[in-house]
Length: 357
Image 1 (tube, one colour):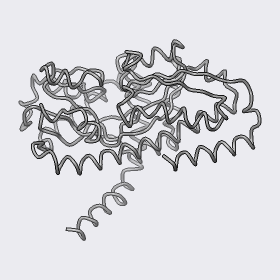
Image 2 (cartoon, rainbow, N blue to C red):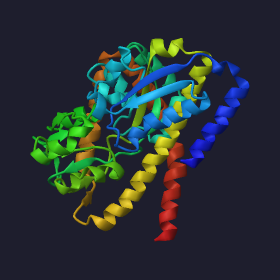
Image 3 (cartoon, rainbow, N blue to C red):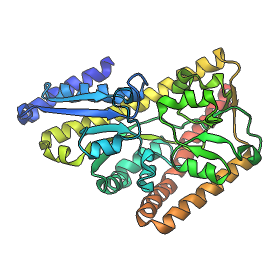
Image 4 (cartoon, rainbow, N blue to C red):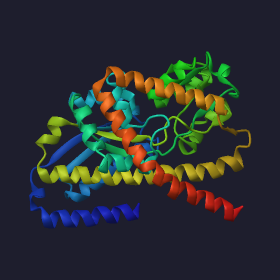
């Protein structure tokens, strides 16, 4: 916390020196989040942003944030920001799949890029430009809002030993992964975060995926569904800030720069916070929750998932030119990035395991 506070103070000093215009009229914005106000670290998207923006403008740009426990519309953030009820929101782009399937790519896609690859695509592979193109139709600007990293494959009441075990299963899983599972016979639904534990406990669903051990353990899913599977579907789940276009355009160039700088800083911090949260929870989980059975999906199931993923993506690309544009952009960048990921990260981890056995 102290480290980021110092960054904010330094940035504030620089901005005040370079841009005296920051002493202009005061700005008061409201922000809505998909997450409840206590669901850390996701819920920190509001307070961290407000703190940085306030520090860099001497308190002249104020952001008041609300969690879903207050505004009661966890999956309505896009509409509320577009309509001007809130100037800014924090959510995940794949929640808008029903409005525009192309938005899902700006969270993640099954068997796609990892965190480093995806951030590089955003900032050096044309991803940010494509993001604005897609979301401009919905009356908002969109910016990366922090990454959860590789998400776990979910909590299941029963072990998945083959494809037959998936058929008829009722599962909460959003985005393109939901369509993949649907092709494999799963009854898919999307439930707001605050209702997941209740749905699992009451048997409304048989399985769910949420994020990773950091947030999952606090939700208590393991008490009902002890089989915890490794991920495949969300290798780099990026969150998003959405900003009402008119509200953003009405800002001075200086305030726009402040907001963009703060959003990028919070995104980096949240990515680190998610990693730390998961790493510490994983260590605790293995030591304190022996009933949790950590699993990997059988290879035939993974192969079927990959085949279904390719079919889902190809189907949308064939009928949706914008989807195809983003899909091909991501695929092309992954083909550039993945060889380096393998020779650097993967080989290093294998070397490390070799000498530390």
